[in-house]
Length: 108
Image 1 (tube, rainbow, N blue to C red):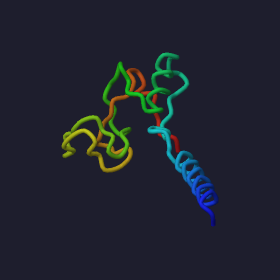
Image 2: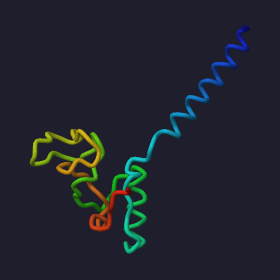
Image 3: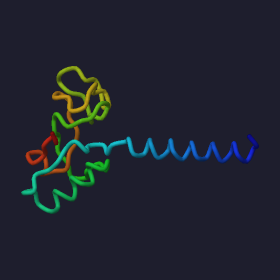
């Protein structure tokens, strides 16, 4: 194969891998949803949070932190931020948009 053919093949493989990786990566909290009874303001804040934006007006919510995504230590032995060992670990908490905690549910 010539150098231009090798280069073209490498670009094709690289583009394929990049597309594969970008499709496989889920949004940070895509397994969670919010009840439609939430106010428009809370729904907008929740939608931003689901896409990875930290809420400005917030409250602690246990059981929604993703693996390594808890916001601080817990009483049961997590030592610091980012130390949860699994997604939706019951004793790990994360900040969620204020007003959304009672309206948030895991999508089954």
